[in-house]
Length: 300
Image 1 (cartoon, one colour):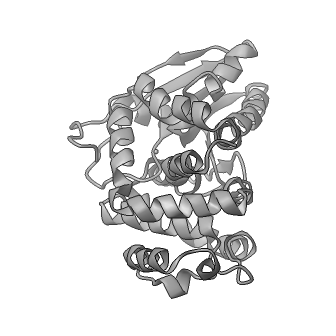
Image 2 (spheres, one colour; image 1 turned 120 degrees about the vertical axis):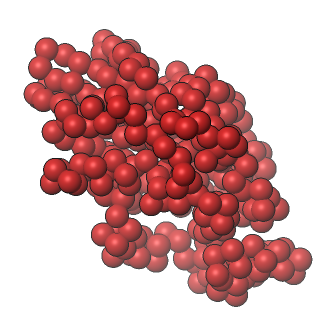
């Protein structure tokens, strides 16, 4: 594993994309996010790289995207739904299992000064350091990061995935998940205690600037800047922490590639919406499909 500081920086950069969650400095009137299509004789699969949280004023539903969604008879997302209420029962169980550690409270690992900083950061989520004390470090850090991004104007209900699901719901088409919430959470829950604490400490140091990197990512996403996203989201992670890169991107992409190959054996049109980081770079879903002889075409 790379140095703890590097791991923490990368974990913070990818937290929203992984769990909730990749409005710009000067967002264009209409964002032009990149999306692709793969085809065989009787199957068409559209793949859209998404951002899980956006500012409400961001407009991204281009005519090409809407036409592709209208054509599709199936929807696949990272998870079976983006509906917080529908996910709540399962998430409560998962948080209890993976996000809490009453036997190892944060107060046993953090200095008095760090606990004071934690208390200030926790206020973003309407909480206190005392209320976060039994959280595992990764879960406390994620709670703070998400609260900071929402304070900056980012909203899951404005995110691409949730809106794509809503569009398909008007035709009574329910999404299928490429993975489970437990699989996503375990990417973070499988950190060592030292890695978790490094993630939390870095989050506490920089929580007031938590939206800056997301601002930059969304700016690149809005312009379809695949090269910029690859450098920021993929290359840096791969260079600084290969293990984290494998857990967050490469391994998941490999699993999804197998499922897309199975889709191609069927018939009809499918729309897939996943975090933008999964569709860019040398180990992306698209690159893995290409290695198996399945070519993609960028449509926007």
